[in-house]
Length: 359
Image (cartoon, one colour):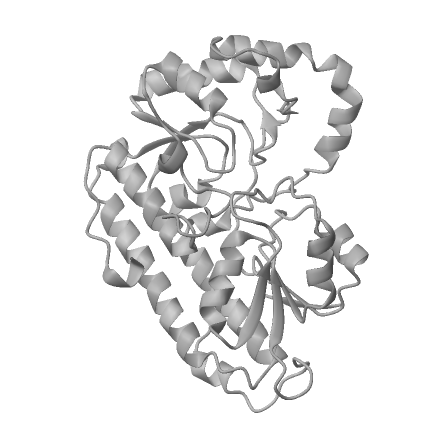
């Protein structure tokens, strides 16, 4: 298996796309390049970039988080025949090494996190993992009581929890790079380079150029919309620590998260929940946002105790995964537009009209 890291911004996109020669290829003339992407976001971005010039398969399905993905036979089959494997990287796909080995994949791996300015991970070292507490009949209890019941199960599940935690070690970086479109632009450019190297005859110039322009428009629209709100009122409370790159890029303050971790399979202690409720009250954060790939029950309890609104269901943020086909969050750009509108309206302002190119 060849490793092709991301190379950063592309100075002359058309030159890369029309290079005279490159290593590798998609097989005999007329064969379409077979590309597998790990996440729903990367699969959508890749499809937009390559248009009809290649086949793109997503390992994850809509609404599925990459943190706890368990690859099945269909994932192994897709990888076995792939020319390119596009990964988000930065420690997100902890299951990737074993999956590649089991599938026999021998194509080119494109780590799109290479060259990005990555944030350090800030996991709570005392975090646990979800023990299925919502199956124990605790609906209607306080947030602290909910967490206390979770603690009751810790001893009896210590061994299995240790094994699970080892499987969710995300390393030193925050892997949620896609919450800042500037990162996705660099990832997209890396994908374009990889496709051009794998199949110099792939005609993706027009589709890639058009999509990169849309990503730049998305970044500009998000920034202008968020700037409708004073900086000290851009307060976000969400389910897990997934919006660090958005926070850095747009001067948004993540007040706190329901789960004290970058891993959405983590659990929260009673002390953490009490602190979060107090922080929501102290800062005046108006909304707790649930996320589309995580059960909203604990977020609902925290919102109720803090006396603020909960946004869930269709109003939940698309954080770790895109939504189902036909929904507002079915594409990367659609998900970012949805999240921006949800946040700006929660802060009491109106986002700018969505450009037609982003609709």
